[in-house]
Amino acid sequence: MHQFLFFIISFLSLNFYAQENLLDTSYGANNGFTNFTVYNGTQLTGGLHIQSTAKMPDGKILAVGVRLIARFTANGLLDTTFNGTGYKLFTSGNYGQLQPTTDGNYIFVDGDNNEVRKINADGNSVTGFTTFNQSGILYLDPSGKIYLLKQNSASYSIIRLLSNGSQDSTFTEINLGSMYNYRTMKVNSNNEIFIAGKQEISVNNRKIVVTKISASGTIDPTFGTAGSFLYSGGEYVGDASHLELLDDGKILGLTSGSLCSGSSCFGLIMYRLLPNGILDTTFKNAGTFVLPIQSNSSPVQVLRHQDGSYIISGTGIRTFYAIKMDLNGNLDPAFGLNGKIITPELAASGYPVYNLGFELYGNSIVFAGIYSIFSGGQLKYVGTVRKYFFDTSGLNTQDLIHQNTIKIYPNPVKESLNFTSPHIITGFVIYDQNGRVVISGKSTLLKQTIDVRNLTSGIYIIKIIADKKSLSSKFLKQ
Image 1: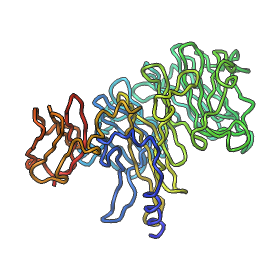
Image 2: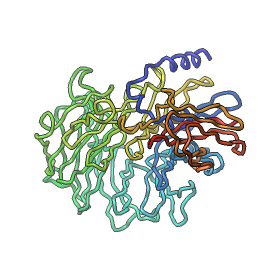
Image 3: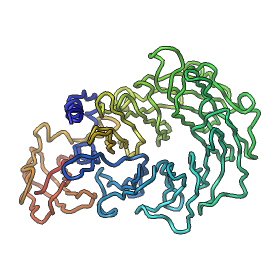
């Protein structure tokens, strides 16, 4: 109990980063975020252990994790139209790598039970898809082909699955051996396969490796040296690895770790290869460099943004981070603070935090992940989502409430919700926790009163339009 109280006190005293002014305070249950906790009576037992998410066409987020499937509204709350609670719990399973498929469903890997499974938007198994009884690193190419990078003991191989979950007999399994530890895979439009990871010579000698497989299923000897690029300068490379195949045939790689001795060399490792697997010396630092963010800054997700730049998220020192950069590794100074958005420390020292990806909503980003607490004599994990605007232009007038230019009262409310403004209020909309409109109206007044007696008890979001701008805030209906 003393340890748990220490955690709570430490958590409340954590320093918040400057990027916190970019929080979308209309999102989630806590003015910008939601923590998904679970109680046994009054005892906090942990929470939803999220491992992977996928944004749905209607803006909701489907999530999988340790023995769970969940769905959140676009406003960052549990979608209670999903199983009545917003989540489904199971007796076993470690679900991850959730990805949307071309038929409108979702595929993921259960690492505990060694399965590839397919579900629909309601978390139910898809009829006609046979669970594939092997696990590995999952990759879906743009045409919908399902590739699986398997690991049997220390040996790796690649297979392909059909849309019904069975193994594609027209694709010959590619055996990769045990020389390298592969962590990620990409397939281009020519059916050439690129895989990346590390060569672990010793504990403190781990090198970046990228291997190319030709469309015929054999290692391409013209790529790098005998089919693989191997960076000879690395002393330590972590387990997180990503590849991006660029339009000009070049390859952008990211990993965690260190490329030199000393703590100042830790950060997000970036490198760029020419199409033939040789370092692109026109890239920063003659082909590879370390961007210091926090600690080893393990990259978790990489996504090409609509303007051609890349957004990368990962885990820092008990934080989530995102950066936005161009193809040359230059940070966008208009994104966050000098190109970075970094959350506060989400747990006290010694308590792990893991960013597990992000989803984009226009010019804002929703982080998803877990932080840890000490409860019931054990370390427990709690799921969390947090939403940030890219920059201050996305804030509109949401801070007007704090500047006392718009007042909403009383809060909590039983019968009548009032709001006043020195500007003419032209309209308002009230949403429930599932993002549905429950009350809306127009006005040309400086003061507005809304009858909320018919609303059920709970948290609601009100969006007010005044002076051609809008703001959102939460209120509690008693």
